[in-house]
Amino acid sequence: MFFFLLNLALADLGSICTTVPKAMHNSLWDTSNISYTGCAAQLFLFLFFISAEYFLLTIMCYDRYVSICKPLHYGTLLGSRACAHMAAAAWASAFLTALMHTANTFSLPLCHGNALGQFFCELPQILKLSCSKHYIRKFGLIAVSACLALCCFVFIFFSYVQIFRAVLRIPSEQGRHKAFSTCLPHLAVISLFLSTGIFSDLKPPSMSSPSLDLALSVLYSVVPPVLNPLIYSLRNQELKAAVWRLMTGWFQEH
Image (cartoon, rainbow, N blue to C red; front, side, top):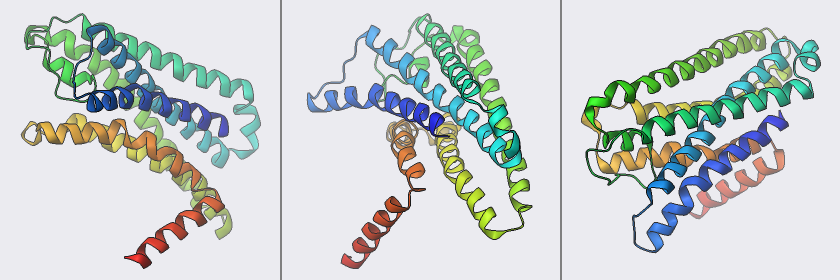
């Protein structure tokens, strides 16, 4: 679990460093410019780290499934070599996904100017600038990626169905609490990651506005990577006690 958490932390750090420093630079220097090459690099890196995070969360779901449903086979199914191979597969898949999306996006001619309505080079915003006659190429790769994301989601869903069935069969309350405490941080991170991303991509066009699009982009690109370390750290009793003291002290003052 801690090996996968390390990889997840690297993905979170990478996605934050891809978008936030440039946005802060533009805000401090009162500019909104980015070069064509810089935009392509930013899109590639952001898609790479976001895709890696999603694939790593899927693998961590399998880790939770084996540890709870097949604990006696954990050492065999998830040895150090198997974990390294799965992590490498996640990073390699993310690299290929980001490379295909970036190459496909920046091979499309731009017919609607070069001004993006976001604080970073976001894929939907770039596709809005492309020519409408290339819609087959534009949405073909997105459909393939959506199918891959759906397969990961289905795997996560059915894994957690099996996990909760196994947890509910545990006779002792302490055992059930320990199992739930192991799974809930991971489930919370997945829910936050998927809900913000899905709502941002599938919201009705009638709800679209520059301010809402900006808020949703911040919500799915910045908030999950920032909250992930906190969510997983809440398993630490000392940190939980410190957060509780901070919250109770704030409520007493107000």
